[in-house]
Length: 204
Image 1 (spheres, rainbow, N blue to C red):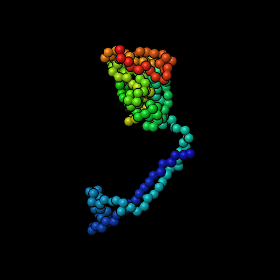
Image 2: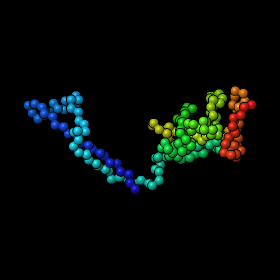
Image 3: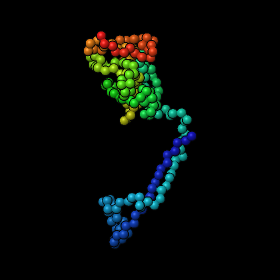
Image 4: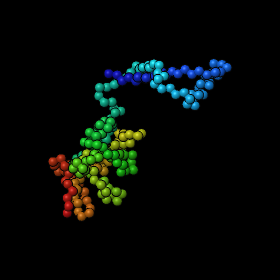
């Protein structure tokens, strides 16, 4: 199987009559008129179309490496793991089991991609997000992953950041609400996984 780049060239033609002392002067007059917007060519002036292709290049039956990114996947009740996923929207949505939401809570060039409606859907609470003082300001529900930032799109998470955020989100957490505060309780994967959910937030 090959991938081909095909160029489509459409030719439009319009004849304009002008009075001039020479062919060069006539061409210059019409050129000036065209640049001034006096002559607009549209579909009525269509003459022909040409298709030209390059020789093509071989592609693998599997997804090309450039179409995937390496991310740090974090699931409720589990240790983080490095995983390679597709960079297209459908693959990103599949990774978090729903519509994606990108948040940028850190100074590093990192995006945290989670399920946009995970909390509304009642998915298990996963990890806490903390401010500079270490206080919890939000909790991510459901699966999420961390990736790098490229030129206008998501990219692979660099190795050094993989290690940094693997340590940051290393320990699975359960959550307990005490008055107006929420406590995050570190748990072991086997215990936190249980039925595939972290412990719910409970009033006390």
